Image (tube, rainbow, N blue to C red; front, top):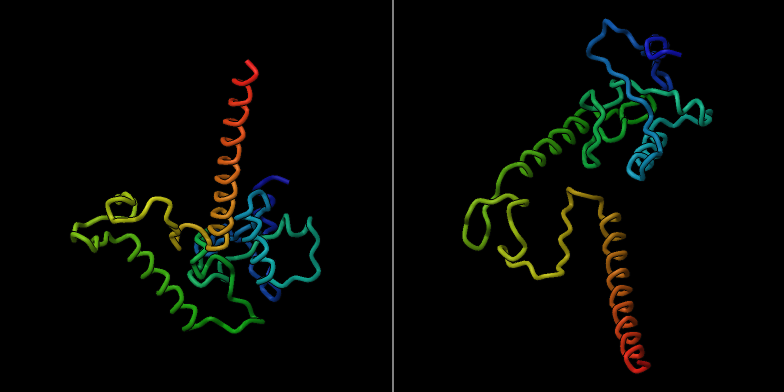
Length: 189
């Protein structure tokens, strides 16, 4: 099936939604269900499927499914995990977000603006952005936890921190083993 034929047959997969693709409608977009190629997309896919609540699906149906922009608060899907539009949330069977959904979207937009606005360093008041500060300039100890809430989910950060600690310990153990082997080798010669 060609992309043009697929688009012509595209309809929203949400229960009760009768929206179909219309090339003349420039405001309504369709989004495919995320794939499972990466852990990020697999997690997004899981959340979307939970929100859509289709019990009659098989993998082939999911592969070809699309959801329309009417199911997102802003009218567009987002790849930002903090965005209220990361997961579709407007469905006939759910509590309509209404003012609450709009409020979530506005809070998200304000947070994005704050994050993009340079801040003042507490020590000397110079203007800086998080990427322009070295840890030593703002008094962060070497090896300190540099978790930034907006960069990765806390669970991912914690898993990476644990893995880093395990690898660091393993590296130290291997260095110790190498030094022992060097000492033994010197004694043999």
